[in-house]
Image 1 (cartoon, one colour):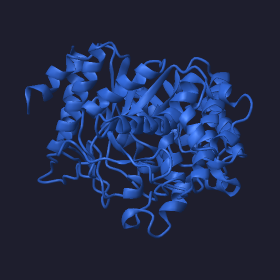
Image 2: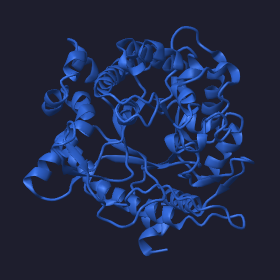
Image 3: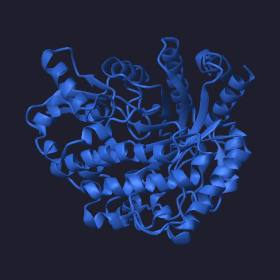
Image 4: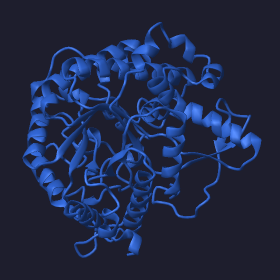
Length: 453
C-alpha cells in the first residue's frame, strides 16, 4: 500500500463534517420482484427479453436484499458507513405507476429507514433509479408528458410518507442513462434506438424533475433536495480547433441538456439547432418549472469520455477517441482519476451550482473469494486515487460534502447482468453469502480514521 493510499493519512485530508457513505439501487439488489404487491418495471420486462442482458440475467432475486434487510444494515454498520444512498422502487409504492398505493411496499422502506436511524446512518433516498412501472409504458413511458405528472404525484406520496426520516432526497439518478442508453442507444430499458424518442424522453424527464421538486417541497420543504447526474468528463483527442469544437458539442449534448435547463433555465443552443425535435416538446413555462433551485447535486464519475470530431455521424458529430492511460477496470473503462477533477472544474466554471456530493465512484474488479478473503487491490487503488483527487478539490474550495462508494455489494449491473462486480462486499449469488473485500476493510479503516480525527 502506498503512503497516498494509507487510509489514516487520506482521512486527515477531509473536513470533520465530510460524509462517507455507500450506495445501491432498488432493482440491482432487492430481488423479491413479485413480492408483496410489487408489479413489473421496465427492467423486469427488458431483462426477461432474450439477448438484452448478458447471460440472460435478471433482477428477480439479485442480492435478495428485500429478505436480508437487517443483515445488510448490520453490514453497513460494520463498515462504519455514515450514510446510505438507496433508491425507492416506484413499482413497490404505486405498482401501476399511478392510482392505488401499495402499503406493503411502504412497509419495506419503513423498516429500512427505521433500521438506518437505529444504527445512526443517514438516509439518502433516490426516487428514480430506472425502474419505471411497466404499466406506464403503454402510453409511451418517458416519451409521454403524462409520465412527468405521474412521477410528481409519486414523489409527493413518497415524501409525505417517508420524508420524516430522510436526510436528503434526489429526484433522478443519471437521467443521461435512462434517456440516451434507454432511448437512443437501446442498451438499457426500454431499448429504443431513436433520436426522436430520446429528445422526447429528455424533455419529459427534465420536466418530471422540476415538477417533482415542487411536489417534494410542497410536502416537506425542509428536506435537502437535489438530483444525481453522471456528468461526462469530456476530453478532446487533441488541441486542434476541430477537436476542441467537437468536445464542446459533446459537452452540450451529454451535459448541457441537463445542466443548462436545471441550473440556467435554457437548453444549449447547439442542441436545439442540431436536434430540432427537442424544441417541439418545450411548452410555455416548462423551462421555469425545470429550473428549480436545488440544495445540492450528486456527481457519479467512473471514467472520462474522450472524443474526436466525426462529421459522418449524427449530432453531436463526434466519435470516441482512444484511451490515454493503459490501466482499465474489468469492464474495460479507462482509469483516469484526473477526469474527476476535470469535470468538476469544468462544470463549476460553466454554471452556478450548489454544493455537491460524489454519489457514485468505484471500479469493476471481478476478483473472487480465496480462502475466505477477496484481494481486490485494483479497486482499492482506484478508490484511494479518486478520493485523493476529491481531497484536492476540497483544498481548492470546491463545495464537496461527501463521497459514496459504488457499491455496497456486488449486484445486478444492468445490461452486464452479474458479470461485473462493483461491490466493496462480495456476494455469492448461489448462497447469498456476503464477504467484505480488502477494499471494504480499507474503506472502513478510512472512515474510522476520519471519525477519530
